[in-house]
Amino acid sequence: MRKKLLQVSAWLSVFMLTSNLSHAAVTKKTILMDPEKRFADHTEAFKALGITKYEGAKSCLPCHKKQVEDVFHSYHFQMSSKLNDVTNLPDAKGGGKHNYNDYCMSIFFNGHTINWIGKVTLKKTPPGHENKITGKLLMSGCSMCHGVSMGKPGNPNMSFEEAATDIDCLVCHISGYGGGKGVKSGLKVPVNENGRWRYESKIDLMKVASKIQKRPSKDVCLLCHAFSGGGDGVKRPNLFSGLMSKKITREIDVHMGSGMDCIDCHSFQNHKVGTVGVDTFSREAKAVSCSDCHKQPHKGIKGWFIENFHTEHIACQTCHIPLIHKSELHRDWSKIEFEGVKWGEEREIKENIIPRYAWWNGKRKLYLPALNGKLIPANLEEPDEGVENVIGKIQFTQPIGKKGDGKIYPFKYHYAIVPYDTKRNVPIPIKVGIIFATGDRDKAIKMGAKAAGLEWDGKSWVEISRYFQLNHGVAPKEKALHCLDCHGPWWSEHRLPFVELGYGHFPGIAFGLGMIFTPVILIGGAFYIYKRKKN
Image (cartoon, rainbow, N blue to C red; front, side, top):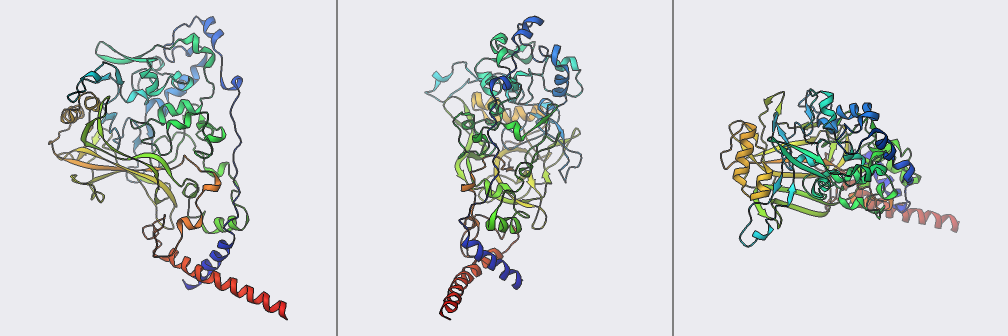
């Protein structure tokens, strides 16, 4: 122990003397594509085939049957993926078809449809706001983003012919058409036919024929992913609408600010995408890592120190994503308020958030409310400090790891207050459209419970929390964390909670010894040089 303390202190002394030496970084050059490479002009093809109206993938089948088949089997359409990294549920499938989450709770619940598709307009307001009832569409359900469909949720048992009329290719291949923007602008309209909702595309196919993207831009992806969770930047840390600007700089995001698109890192193979993370659910292809592009990122004395004392235990993101720009930290479905144009739950949104740090070895724990048609009772934990009026906590996603098993990663920690069925010990999905339209919380909960085959006693609430991994918002190398951001004397506060991470007070003691040895080495060295010159 003493030997290790002295070793670290000695290297810390050298590190302090060279802390201004910047480490090298491999920055991928801009890959903005010219129009000829970005777009595939379909004008003549549509004319030759007599295609004048867009009818989903049916319009694309004459030339792209294989691609439509690939999308049919993809996570983006099926909203389901077999998971290989969940320790407590080895046969789990995750995704929109299965999850109960800490934002809008459930799209589906144990096979029951909860918040998939419909038409939500404001129907009731507080006194004095009646003029806000205009009949304007607020939203059409989770299908605005989930499922890349024309209204029917993807199902592996549906025929390919049926799927071909339901897959919406232009969600990803035309800018401005997907997500809530496309629905609210009238390009994709929810219609009720004989009691069943679907989308009708109003896009002028011949107008957009020359702008169909072979390679989807970041703006296409962000139309959904920047607004997930019901707001701009509220869910995925460091994904927000500002990234869609052509003026986005490297100060905000090194990769997007250099002209990169989402699919440069999230590469697709046969329309399948792989992700890796505590809070993501597509596991259908290989995900990339930092080292795939950045082979030797650290150079010089400082780089040697980082490579030998940090990279084995600390993830790249920990130093290179120092902050969450702006995001939601919690929402409370027990407290409903009028927001000017609609009703909504109470939310806490903050800016420049310091991440929460935890060990992660690539595995995780996951809570699902049901598996293979059977409910899974939750094992309630003690609620987090300061969370009141709940009977316990459900941990939706949680990284697994410890000192010596994994690396330290940065996370956003988010929690929500949701209703709970105390008889079956599962959280209850809310029909959120009822809340947005009327503010009637209890009716929304009871209708959600009825649709899911559950019951609510009118008073029971639980906390449900999740760890969101930070992968976006990489800062320029000059703004990466430095030694003093994390290290300091044991009596001071540090960014990293060393005690909780299993280090005890060792890093603080080592730093203190470094502070002692540094002047000793400097004075001793100066005295030695002085004596040599004198003699």
